[in-house]
Amino acid sequence: MAKYVNVISRDYGSWVFLGEILTNLSLSPSNPHTSHCGTCTRCIEACPTQAIRAPGVVDASRCIAYHTIENRGPQLPTQVANHLHNWVAGCDICQDVCPWNQRFAQPTDVAEFEPYPGNVAPPLEDLATLTEQEWNQQFPASALRRIKPAMWRRNAAAALAAQGVDMSAQQSNSES
Image 1: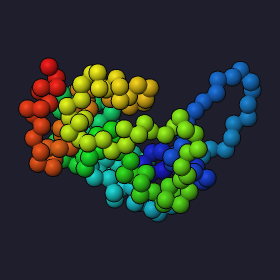
Image 2: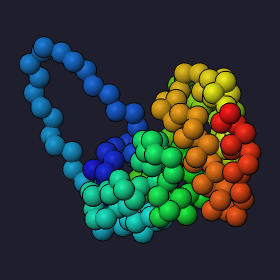
Image 3: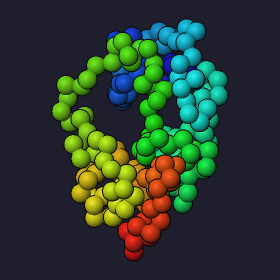
Image 4: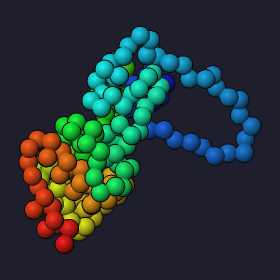
């Protein structure tokens, strides 16, 4: 397990999908997964909100990914909002800096795993005014549907505010 609490594969890094198989077969357990981080602390040092409190300990109350995806509140905590740097749907900084991912991660060859083209770096201004209809069109069958339209607007407005852009007038228009 990585210090940022993801499983690291020696073949692919941490950019992997996890799955499970339910069976009534009697199976022998595999060896426990071992840590591959050694003395590396790149993920801990790179986390903009210091959410990785210690190796293997992530504090969700400080985690950008938690707040942009799971937090259903009307506002993001200031300590998170001030560090979004355009992250409005999760945060992968810890994975981006991981040497295992830099050396071994491979692009998928499964077309269905690729993001919809319009969902790669959409303008924050568009997300800050996203309507229910636009959300349904932009995220028809996506894990990103966990982030409801009001959350997209909240997250994008917070990222823009951290850059000094005020979207409050446009945002209230999209909510009506």
